[in-house]
View (tube, rainbow over the protein chains, first blue to last red):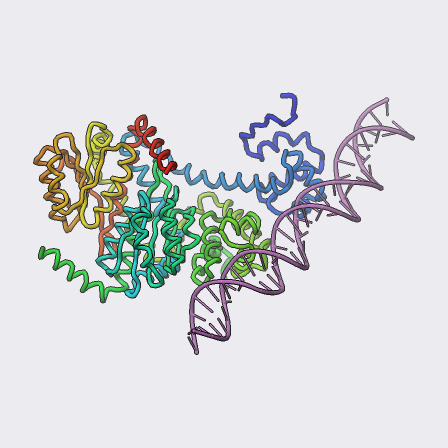
Length: 290
Length: 290
DNA sequence: GCTCGCCTGAAATTTTTGGTACAGCTTTTC
DNA sequence: GAAAAGCTGTACCAAAAATTTCAGGCGAGC
């Protein structure tokens, strides 16, 4: 318990705890700073030095000395630490409120997984800008547009799912394989009137990104369905629809992407009902005939 | 303008909600800023202008124009608002988890759809026989088995989704096209050690049914993922996993099927972690190499 | 096809903020 | 009671941040 040299601080605890523990060794004005910070933790520290000093009734230099004593190289670093701590803390209640705790059979694993997926769906809807959704629906309901769907390793299946529905609702759609060798010759036909709906979630896939960049360069309207951290495609996309994808698994969940697709299909179907209905009936007749 | 005197907090709509609502009037770069902020709300806005701009892939002036449009006189005022909102939100512990249930704009259509899908997922989990789920997981975790996935018009995409995951987790899997012409020559190789996972929901598809009957006749173990009314395939299937699929749309929702697939992937991955982990790592290395 | 207007980012400018030097004051010690 | 040591605040400076300017560019509309 000697030393105090500070070099072996493992910092497993929050800064607040450390301050409470070390507060006795502080000078009077540092102590006032500490009390103000702790009484309003951590928000009192997120303002400027001057504001903090004023609230604590001390001078700015004293505040600086305070944060220096805590081991930070400067006030900005101190604030950065507070923000990160806060962010981490806000994360946990959500991830923490999940633990099952009842019955330990195989069912609870499934039920827990389902709860997580449901949470994702809620969060997805919550964070989906309605205007963005509407805009994309309008885009896809426009019969003058040609629509292409593309996706990566796993999201490719979601893209196919979208394609198979829109093929019936509106026509003039296709699915683009993500291997560049397979789209190199097709992409040259993509231009201003085309819409490219791309699906890409983390471990963002280079070939899909390249496809979207090429399409955007040629004037196509790119719609991106991605995760909450946004694929780099967002840079060239006209519209972005983010979904939450974290699941208690080694894999991400695509349920949010699927939800977006199905909601779009429903929206476009009802918007274009006048033209979609005869289409669907005709297709149904063909299927029966075969 | 009156009240305020009494009961519950007035809860002035959060900045995040306002952004979602107004996002359509934004310019493209403002939209990017909005997406970055919303996807990391509110922490993405607590750094400096330069940092924010960099994360959003836009320039500092664009960020300034963004906050100006939101009605703030400058970036510091914007940050102050974020901090105050965050602080207020932290006061009420769980109160935040309350999804807003007011207003019935374009959002309600999407929200209503999502609620229906969520209801489906809940119903699916509750009606899924745990023993059946466990049995299927064991089957798919068995490395001596060969696994095939098949589906119909729309469910084919779900089958592909399953295949693309299991291909990485366990290997020795494939996807069978539903057109008989494409599987006639492949089905002769399907025998006792094969597992056929078929997806089929209402408007049950004749060719998928035929495929399953053929496979079953040759001794394969058929696993059926279907809707609550059960595809005719149920008669030849060893295991049946039903999902609820009714949505407020002209189309059925496949979210329940996807949930089952993802839960199975998670279960099999964790069961076979010893062998799956090196596989996944090796595949990852190959991907990086390419 | 051309012009007009809006969006955008590079660079310059201004403002703010964090940081430092130093002198005065308080407290401690002999 | 006087000197030394150590806090603390004022005044100042340097650095960085926010903001404005301006010119290029892209797209809408004629």
